[in-house]
Image (cartoon, rainbow, N blue to C red):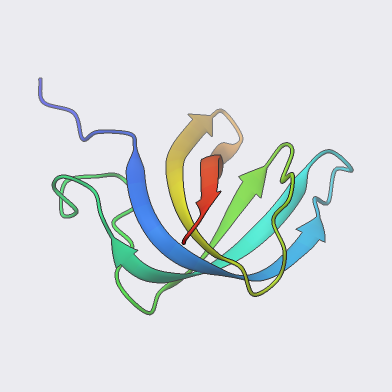
Length: 93
């Protein structure tokens, strides 16, 4: 069985950060600048340049609105649905 890799590497701009509805963590709205995954057509999220993607961040740290970042994203699934998750973010230099 071949499974798609559950990791997506992107360059993005943080458009908005809001508290998550359940009170834990934040929802981060990203505008994708580039998908830098090894095989962008094979990952679960498959974001393309210009797409907007909302991701969950347990601890968004020093992310600010307007920041340009390189991020690692994943997709978590369970009995109540699925959620895109921000695993790591670094500022673009």
